[in-house]
Length: 335
Image 1 (spheres, rainbow, N blue to C red):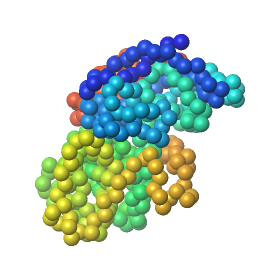
Image 2: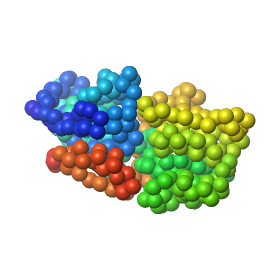
Image 3: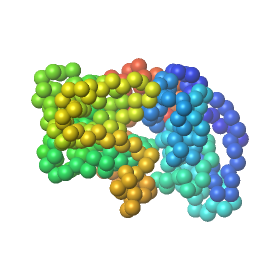
């Protein structure tokens, strides 16, 4: 049996290649993909050739073995249907709709322990954005916002918008999105922000300067870290969820920051915060993400649907036309 898999072969070059599908081992199943989603953050870094090649792809995801050197398969948002079982897998797995942290390909095998069963009341279009929602849940858990706090979210891409949506459900004094693209500012308001400002608007930036108790930097743009620090008040905290990859980062730490007692905290979804690990597991956090998928319905952020054959075009859209695109998904021909 053959499959089609998406490979990143060079900067800004994505190709669909045919290869053999391995037979499921006794503890594995075979899955035919229904839908997969591009990660607008990490995956675009890899597409552009901006990811540090000395790092592993993701040691916490079995399907992403190896490093970040070209050529490589990447992606971690697939929903499909189980169509073949290994000898030790219970029969009730056959025909189940499952989520997998798996690269873009039309058929794959996976251990059942690496799959999430998609609940019957969660649409496939929402389920495919589970990783984005889990990231948003992780950021909010790491920030631990208090009642009545003033919060700023810098970057209103898909993960930033989902973070805004979660924060909007909390009793905050204010919630402000910061985003340079007009479409994303509009969505920031729809997702519950009290205001959405353009970082190039000097008057707007003056209004939010040093106002935040907690600021999230989720833009992926190194220059935005200075915006986040400027928005944060004395003794406040900045949650850094962006991964800048190999892009150089220059931060102004020589002025106000030196006396500000601002705490800068890295937040990344592959692990749990150490202070939570005694009670929380990654599955418990995923359970919260599933619940938030039901509430927020992130499928509303899907702006572009393409056939898997058009995968190169999907990445080019996000890379070159970000002002018009939020989330791109690939549809497969399996029914």
